[in-house]
Length: 257
Length: 113
Image (cartoon, rainbow over all chains, first blue to last red; front, side):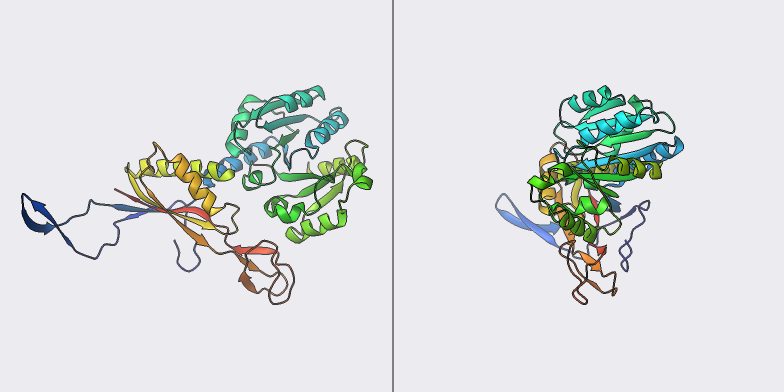
């Protein structure tokens, strides 16, 4: 590792003997008499790695990204807390856009195929990944899912991540954009509590705005907090139930394609 | 609990490197965890202890070095210690928009027999 800037060449593995500049003897007893003799350590190897622990995930994510670019697929990673309305937004989006767009969905949940079933009813091909005890999707799961679902060129692929604002933030899946969904039935201080997710997202949809008259959620506060963490993040106020903000969402999607 | 997945990534990475270097018994592993990398060092260490059984890290001592978080103010370019991603710049009081240190999360080295 460079001692000035701390960087390390990930491909460079350096092996050397450990520094060992002391000598010592040890002493033990044999049938009532003591003697000493030189002590030798078993030979050791120090392997300098300086390898990012997420290296393998990031390598596979880049591979996924290359696959999407090669097929002109717009891949979006939808992240959120549980119950913010991701699946409902997706269902409505598919119903509205399926006449003019090819849409595919990878669903991530700990258990059940309920979401994939809902998505297929709205008209898009879907594949469910059950993460079991896992709390997030990673690039390898997407890589394997892509082998099971034939994605058309010039299509949109939505990856609906596990509802969790913590763990999915650290795992690049190879998406072009990350879309974060929160809802007004949650606290408006969500960005302060889950900064990594807000920092790593490109678009924040604030859903269930039809409920704003009945809850204490302050939209300006939420947007200010998120903007402080990530000055580039965009916002769409949406109610998947009434249709508010859906047009703006479709315009945003068109700009990414 | 992504720390558990990270711990399993470490075992895969170490196994790969051990195979490459022809070693089978790891005595010590040194891991760097930045304070702003999104992984809690204590939870990660416990997670690693949970998953090392029957792996080549089973008898390894795990050493973790923490790297403090650093921020760089986007307005006045001052570098300062950042404990939280929303810390103010201590010089001009504005929000630092850039995390400049403490995002490391890597296996630094292994000691093998």
